[in-house]
Length: 258
Figure 1 (cartoon, one colour):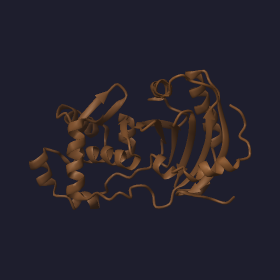
Figure 2 (tube, rainbow, N blue to C red):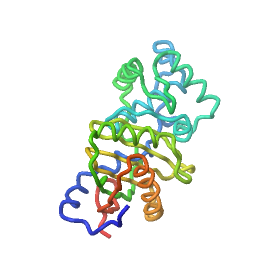
Figure 3 (cartoon, one colour):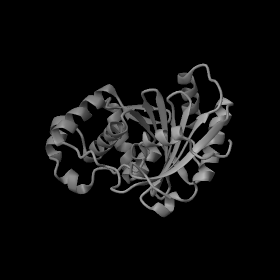
C-alpha cells in the first residue's frame, strides 16, 4: 500500500459525500425504557415473540434500515452489541431460526423474507426511533482505490467478503457483512465495545476505511495500523494493491478542520 498523498479537489468533493455515521457499528439496541413502553404481552400473543427474540429481530432490522442494506450479523457481534448472555442469545436465535424469521448461515444470521415482513409490521406499529447511533460520533476516515483492473466488480466483492467475514484484527471482532447496492460493507467492533471499524468496497474499486468512536482522542490513534492490516488482507485476496489518497476526521458527518 502506498503512502497517502495530499488531497486533491476531487478528493475533497468525494469526502463530502462520505457518511461515516452510516458506516459505524456503534448502533444502540433498544433500551429498557423503550422496551417497557411496548406491550410485550400482546407481542407474544400476536407474534409469538419473547423479549429477547424481539430485541434481536428489531436490532437486525434497524441495522438494515440505518445502513440501507441487508446485514449478516455474527453470533459474537450480536453478543457484544446487545449484551445478552450467551445461553439466552443462543436460545433466542435458535427459536427465531426455527420460526423462519432468521436465516442461519455459516458465519452469521440475517432476516429471512418472513422476518423482514414481521419487522416491517412491528416498525410501523411501535414507531422505533431511527436515531440509534451516538449523539456525537468521531470518525477517522481513509479513502482510496484498488489500484488495478478487476474484470468483475461483483466477483471481487464476493471474494473480499468471503475472505474477511469472521476475520479478527487485533482486538477487533467481526460483527457484520452488509450487502448494499453496488457496494459491500464489513464491520468490526473492539472487545470493549467503544470503537468500531468499517471497510466499504465499491462502487467499482473505491475503498473507504472508517474508524469511529464517541471520543475524539480514540480516533486519533490506531488508524494507520488498521489501514495497513486491512489493506494487506484485501490485497492478498485479490492480488491488487490499495492506494490511500486521503485521510479525514469527521464529527458526525462534518469534516473537522485540523
